[in-house]
Length: 312
Length: 173
Ligand code: SF4
Image 1 (cartoon, rainbow over the protein chains, first blue to last red):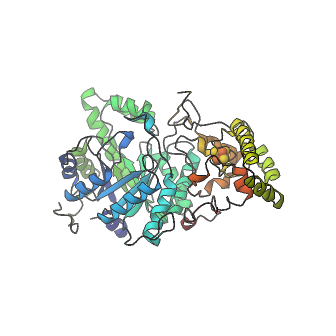
Image 2: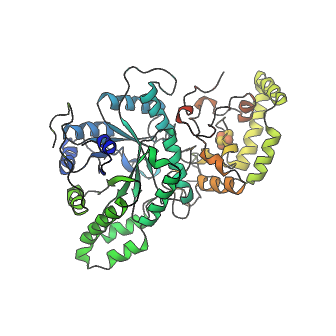
Image 3: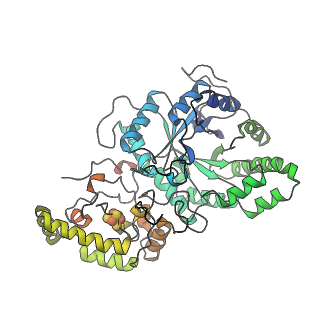
């Protein structure tokens, strides 16, 4: 099934993440794609994540498609002005990439080229509007017509946990007004805060126009837990989660982290208005099927993506 | 990093209420439009006027002279001092204490903007959609551009409609 089909059918959607390699090795994508194939509706291909140079999300998306996994091509405002952004969006359309995810992007200051120019010519909301206008009206931001229109779904991201929390639902409402059709959230470790945010979205009528995928992922070591709690902007790991991981013998932390992830999926799935989950398993792609299976999410029926070669 | 000329969050030195009040004095009217047109015909006067705007607004708001001022819609907090220059609200990297993702020791400009706008009774401004800026207007006087009516479509009015954002080519000159 594809992401679009899952949304249309109202079926619980599952996306995961594929981080492209630093080198020119296409198999790095293929290997990850094969672990996910048949289990997810689509997989995000990240765009130089963390402002570290990687194979482009466009190339990675094409490789993922070849390996039978539908990509969600991430595209950030960090490295491209509006000319390059629109060009990549047109290219994604031409290559048949079915979904794009448009975001501001991490600042280069913490990447592997802190001396790079941060571009930020558009912001993510403006990029969403630009993309929708290209697709639905067939015109560029300049007003110039494009010939064949791209067909991708337009996605965005939101972090329900970052201050100012009271503004986070309205922030997404702006992106949806600009044209976002689905949203993936930052990691949900605190289901209460997530549910409160979603209730606000329902009040604002946002969930009628935009599918919400809750971001989830396993914390498989105390070191990662520590890192997420202190080192990563925008990630909120509540004390309770930490206590739980510390409460088990060292050898069982990984297992406990996976169990917590499974429970989180089940709990967010019960929140009214949730359309699916986005599983981010940093380097633990092989564990995604187990997590989904234990959460009671059946494998996705194999799709033959037209013209994309073999499918799982 | 103190010599880094790139945008850094700036906490305004002028209260938001005072900002709204002063705006009334600067609001576009035919007289100002004539003044703006006159300034644009006189390069030296325009430069002096722009320099005065720069000094004042840099001191009060950390102005980056984008030439298309967002202050009236952001609780008089300059979004161009955001390291990502986001004009539509904060990114997802704000720290639990409200710190900027890029300069954690400074408060996110949007956290400040939202606080100020809401405290001054202008919270609904934050729902406005801001169109992409026109990079050609940088270093120009935003007051002159405003008085000349070039800011009329800087942001959309409610209800939010995506087709109103970013479609109009900016700058009528
Ligand atoms: S003119 Fe632009 S840079 Fe200056 S205060 Fe206004 S929004 Fe900020």
